[in-house]
Image 1 (spheres, rainbow, N blue to C red):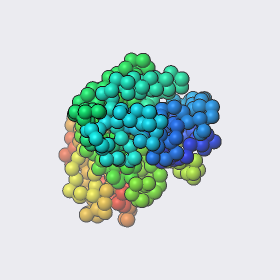
Image 2: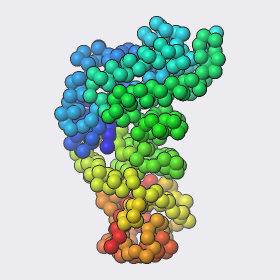
Image 3: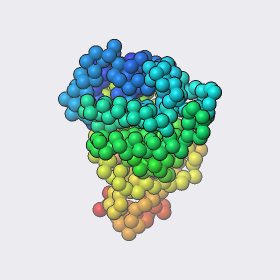
Image 4: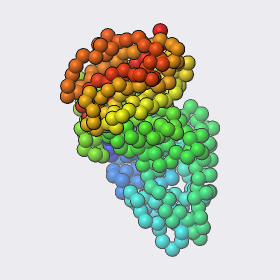
Length: 411
């Protein structure tokens, strides 16, 4: 359960602000604090600094030690963002070694996010990255690296002659990950690439989590996670509770919709929760407690989905491997075609077993345009797995972009 600082502070790295964020996060139950982009030399925005993997002395005169110590004293693990394969032309590294930039010869590739790609086909470039990352992991108690890669490989030639360089680049990345894991076996690594653009089998073999999208809008995430989850298990899919107003779309979502969406993944926060109201902090803490309570099921069970005649209502869940329990989400992604929405079927259970079905707090408040009593919702019910899968139960009426959770337990 992590908090990432990107959408909370962006490049505004201030020790007082970050320690305050860590205090609020720890009080809510967060287990890992990840310092994102902006900690290294010359990195006050995204125009400069990539490649200069030294802690910026002007921002961090005592290094990262004060923040790392503060985070760890509050019982959280410390994580750090890096983008090792990238280099800004405006960096000490690029000025010292322009020959290390991937290019086809005679010109540089088009820039993306003001950056180019460091050619790991050069032994010296590979050795530089290994030394810098190893030094950071050795000096600081870092338990987690968010390993980013924010541009495509365009004109990806091995300098100076420009021969194709992607294959060697990929093999060197794998070697770098392997070597760092061998030297620091306790470190976990997340693969990020403007979100989920690098989730190949070689990366999955060497990392513990992938970031599925840089968009934290819960509605967009419902679709993103639906299809990412077709191939990847929930425990590998980074999913964060973003701010009330999405930074990427401008949409406004309730905290329950944001948290309920992030719940079915590797749950985290990307939001300046120092500015959240006391009520929202308490509600967020309740979601964190729920995640910790059920993640053993979420991260080991079988992911299931059920079709519903109304395209606005999505049904998905996770069923324990022994089919003793399950958690389902009923999620609306638009205004419903039907009102009331009819029955929803809950797949994956033992057809011959009896189950208790009941709403699961904190997502047990069905918010809809019309409310009428559902007997099973108010007091729970006991039904067979066959009945739940074939006939189903009446769904509550929900506004668009709302969700509720259902817990099912074998009796």
